Image 1: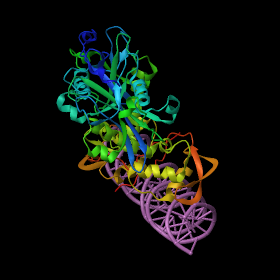
Image 2: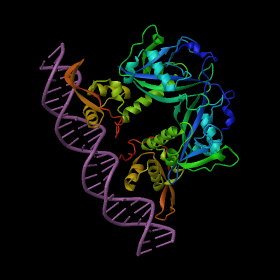
Image 3: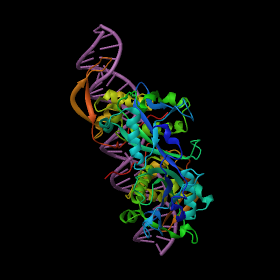
Length: 238
Length: 238
DNA sequence: CCAATAGTGTCTATCAGACAGTATCGA
DNA sequence: TCGATACTGTCTGATAGACACTATTGG
């Protein structure tokens, strides 16, 4: 690189945006999408996102868009995991101009309902399978695929599932997070053994809870403070 | 996000760069750094990198800079692993103007000598420990730390070490890659068993080779084509 | 011979997969 | 009572850690 490039008038102009893959657990793994109003891709579904402002880091933008487009209150934001995914920069990814987008992965234990009267009015929850099968705007299908794979991988070697299960959860609910995210069933007894044997994964509370479909009351747990799972929770192969 | 932001004259202007963490194995884990000639941080060491050109993706820029600043020939580039690390975007990370940098991790089996007469003339190999202890320009110490941790983590669950060991290597050399990257010793017999038992990790060749310090001739291996290591190679904890 | 490296074999503790069996709830 | 879920226990095969042993080179 030659240093002449540093003259503010000679570097090529870029717009920088943050796009958000916000996932939550439902009957299936679901993602928040917004319906686009303007061309290009008017009427298509897209990931929520927006421009990085002059005094923001991209992470700041991601947090701001998460609030603006989902109606998540700032006070609820600490329950939402947010991490950088990857940056997408193909020159033709936006037909209008040069836009570089840094994607963020957000994991919410609840399914915040988009509030009317805000940007979030155009937001809808869609199952990840449907979203990937349909036609997302720009390269958002690729971004979503990267986000989903990141989430699946991170359940293996981190305690992140506790974020998706909510502040309080039973072991059955925690297992449900794994099964929905990975799309496969797990052996109950072995899952329990692994979770309880791993230091810092979950912490018992005094409460018990009865599920919707009856059954014996289950002990309620909280996140145990730990971050890593060593050795990892093995995802069934094949 | 409001769509008025798409007017090319209203979005804030950003410069986008690619910075490269090029690592190789020596007596210790080493990184390629360049001495800066211009302010700010004139005379300081920095990661090689440069601006993204109008018709390039950031990955294109990373490949180009890798050639320009290290003298790696385009034909040797396929032996070099290159992957995106993360994007750094704090508003004040460059005192002159707003610069967003996407960092890339590159792993080279050899230690290409910077060639005179090119940008690479200012390039030097520095041990990672020394680089992190010293004062790198901008936020490059943070970027380097992220790159090193990524490399260490990826040796656990991918076959990436074969890239750092070179096109052909003995099991002793492959173990050396792990030990230098992780900064700890490994049991020889267990390491061999793990590597040889993992499908697609390494492939035997007909050659044998005698090391510098004597000893019995060792079988020479090549990369085995596989990418993932399941279950992973466990890094000793504590 | 010695130092150094390559390669093999084995014992043991740990852990994941599989599955049986008991306990406790709502209907 | 039945269906459903919570929880416990146990057997087995796979694997990692630790370590002993032999083999082959250069000096």
